[in-house]
Amino acid sequence: MSELIDHTLRGSWTPSGAAAAPLSAHALRWLRERIGLVEESTPAVPASLLDVPESALGEAVRAELADVVGDQHVLTEVAPRLGRAGGMSYTDLMRRRTGSELAVPDGVVLPADPEQVQRVLDVCVRHDVAVVPFGGGTSVVGGVSALCGGKAAVIALDVTRLDQLVSIDPVSRIAVFQAGVRAPEAEAVLASHGFTLGHFPQSYERATLGGFAATRSAGQASAGYGRFESMVEGVRLATPAGDWRLGAAPASAAGPDLRQLAVGSEGALGVITEVALRVRPAATEHQYEAWVLDGWQAGADAVRALAQAHALADVTRLSDVDETEVQLELAGGIKARALHTMLRGRGVVEPCMLVLGWEAASRAELKQRRAATLQVLRGLRSVRLGRKAGEAWRANRFAGPRQRDALLDLGVCVETLETATRWSAVSDLRSAVRSAVVRAIGVDRKAPIVMCHISHAYETGASLYFTVLAARDSDDPIAQWQRAKAAAGEAIAERGTITHHHAVGADHLPWLSGEIGTIGVDVLAAAKRAIDPTGILNPGKLIPGREPA
Ligand SMILES: Cc1cc2nc3c(=O)[nH]c(=O)nc-3n(C[C@H](O)[C@H](O)[C@H](O)COP(=O)(O)OP(=O)(O)OC[C@H]3O[C@@H](n4cnc5c(N)ncnc54)[C@H](O)[C@@H]3O)c2cc1C
Image (cartoon, rainbow, N blue to C red; front, side):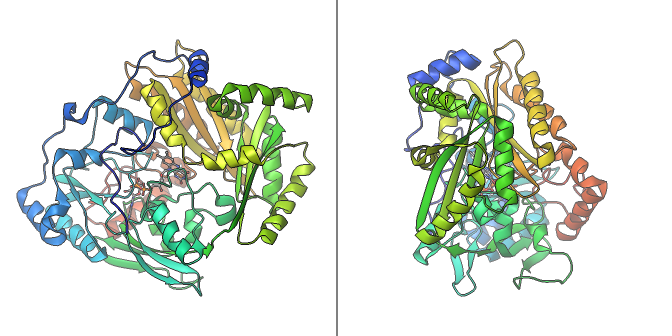
């Protein structure tokens, strides 16, 4: 179905040949004043200068793997291995850019179908080789780091040749896809049948359906279409214990829902080879608009009111004052000044932008749903900015990662982190995380910008998504972010979840037992022992310190 994902240029998001998102002169000046920039270009170290260890994949294993997938689909050269050395977090990108602490797989294996995936696992069990399932490689939590876990070698099991629509049942509105299908390709195929998934995370352009399922992903339109796990009707996994299929009916009382052991399993409990997904009629109408509320608390109260009245737009995204300011300044400061003047005239001193987007299969449906949202909003001292600002957000909804590349080149430490909590704790948690990150990252420097938005709201609470912009500590950029992340983790512990949609990976492991308890960790470890007794699957991820020897 698809071209293989471009894994060659992994020091950045922007694929080779595609347009980057350079910053305007105004944006540069503004950033220099606000956070102070390292006044030099800091491009990635060329791959040829990186120190890559020789592949530890023995000749016998390589030959057996080649027997299963074909010789050309077992790659042990440096370039494809480097291409799967980690995901897309700031620390992953900085490791590749500086060549330090890179965990490079010993080989890349590309099976073509579920049967081949199963046979690859069988070979790896026999030879005690660790397996890192690899989809789009967009993990930001160390989920695809090539950790060996004490095994003889480690391979990246790249699923992107599993790229087929298996079946579609328009009556039941279920489509079955192989796990390596990328989101844009899934949408294109579904559109030709009049359907959509409605799953649009910011990583949409690169990530795969299997990756979404394995990490409990949440898209920008989650208020309307739901989180990815709510779309999963069924799942097929290749495991060291054999092929496992789950999900036979729309609902079941046959004990706990074991599909949830696959959804969120992060490659540690099996390789997802197929997912059966609930699909919806494709939207033919859409309307995006922006509103402004005065101050964070007023904004959060508005989103809560919408959620509790079941009147959320499909996209409901509230930016705090800092994020609103950054968005306007990076887009060109004149707009920001004009807007501030207009808003002050309307009594708004701390503008927080609220983007609302409705998607519908008919104009009548869209009008009805928009009316329900606006009825709640109009009672809340909100100012309507109009469609232009909303549509501008929509047009740029996937541009953030490319802008991050430009910031990385300029010596900015730019990274995100996320959590979720109950409405009663949302504002306190936001303040606690902001203070912790500012303290940890901003030594002897201009204060960093720590901005925040709510983009996933529920009746009982909401996610908080932070973006940090700081002058990079060029002596040790990785330690600088790790300090900030650890401080945020401590601030979040016991007040919110350690992750709302990025998953646990390796990076959130220290806080997992705090959230699910030691019994929870033991349950996960027991499941792993049943499914993966020798512990070849994604060592060092999801399950803290419980890898079987
Ligand atoms: C710029 C950027 C923006 C992002 N925005 C969002 C967002 O809006 N919402 C969101 O939810 N996430 C977001 N993410 C995080 C990331 O995109 C998601 O976690 C996504 O679900 C990962 O999909 P992937 O195919 O890239 O998986 P990978 O990164 O390849 O893998 C992620 C994890 O899943 C496992 N895995 C992958 N495929 C399989 C499989 N077939 N079977 C078993 N395990 C598998 C891997 O081993 C790893 O542990 C963003 C990331 C970036 C870099």
